[in-house]
Amino acid sequence: MEREGVSERTHSTRRPPPLSPAAAATSSPATSSTANSSFFSGDDGGDESKKFKSVPFVTRATNFVSHRTGVGVGGGFLFPCLAVSLIILLFVSSSVLYTRSLVCVSDTRRLAVGDGIDGLGSDFGSLGVPWCRSKHGKTVEWTSKDLLKALEEFVPIYETRPIKNNMYGMGFDHSFGLWFIARWLKPDLLIESGAFKGHSTWVLRQAMPDTRILSITPRHPEKYLKKGPAYVDENCTYFAGKNFIDFGSVDWKSVMQKHGLADLARVLIFFDDHQNELKRLKQALKAGFKHIIFEDNYDTGTGDHYSLRQICDQFYIRGGGHSCFSDSDETRIRSRREKFWEKAVGINELCGAGEVWWGVRGYMRDNFNHSNQAISFSQHFQNSRFVESVLEVYWELPPVAGPSLTHQTRYDPARATNPIIEDGRYGLFQRLGLSRLETSVFNGYTQMAYVQISEPGS
Image (cartoon, rainbow, N blue to C red; front, side, top):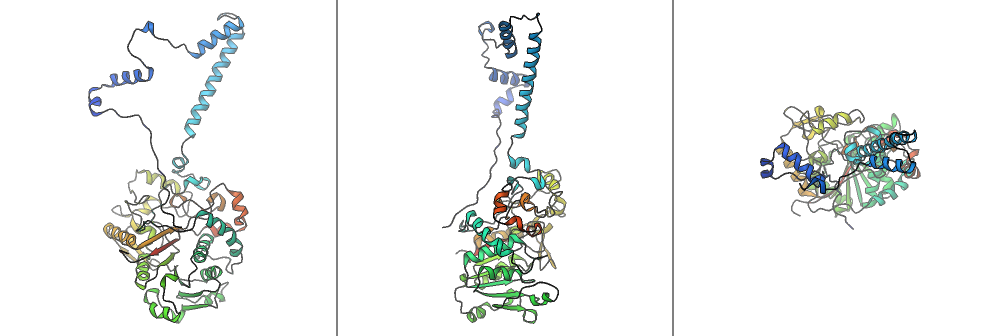
């Protein structure tokens, strides 16, 4: 069953109704003050002697105590003590109520200025999450309950991984996402572009033990075995080393015929090759593929290639667009968050000359940042419109858990969706076995995205 839409958070501000233009023009400050005073006091301008005159609470309490104790204003020691005690009690009570009015604000507003690692779950997404729009409003079939259930199953599998220290490769979050999506879709063929030491190949094999894998990677994973742990799959066809050919240059029609596949909707593509994702999207669409996972879906201002997240960062999309003004709220928030999160981007890093912020300071990066092309905002906008015309489904993998649980210090939660396990739920985090893992495996989150595509107009 498909579930549509992504829950959106709205903020409202309560304020007194403004004066009409006519009233504002004819009212002086003095008359306005008088009118406001009359409104709150109920003054109708009548005879003062006929009005009920409010007696202060302290005076009434004093009269009551004097009457009950028989002590007059000028007599005895009991009354001054009681009066002073009463005044102190009233002062403390008013202070407590005032203090509570200060702290009882929404978590989102308080945490938007950056409380760092100790921030609560509502800190997630406080700087906006520009979610790519699908052309028919579809979303994925799985739910947060499905993700939680799968986490419990995946943790012991992950603990058996052959490459314990996968530096510069996938961490736990994306390993789980790849395993979960592959297992859910159950494709007839798995294709990965970019294998590095073979960790992603191993993850795919755990999800689909008997499915054929095609691995496209410049350097064969077996080369890494000479220096340390690596994984080479026996049921995998490698386009590597001397046999390497780029994904966009493969004759996919011949490859599919060789493997007896006529329905390309039964194929899952996994890109972890640090290439321009707009280019890869067009290549996959031209070949007829439908299901794609992009591992490094970098946020605006970060990464070594143009990503879907960057493409969909637009003013017309909720959570998208940026302000490069030095005195803007975004500038102040970002400057504080840089102190806590390694990958948090300050406004000077986000914006280039001429207040260009799209892509990475107005550039469309490609091929591990070996290619760096400047693009106009109009081109960036048109790229977004094209992506929307082919997207059937867009979904970003949430972080597995909040930073107070994982102790990760790299990605900024303010630019991420709510985690699968929210901050503070340590019991659940521990029960799923996540507390057994090294904290370093949670530092690789870069908004992995799953997309389903089709031709424009379909």
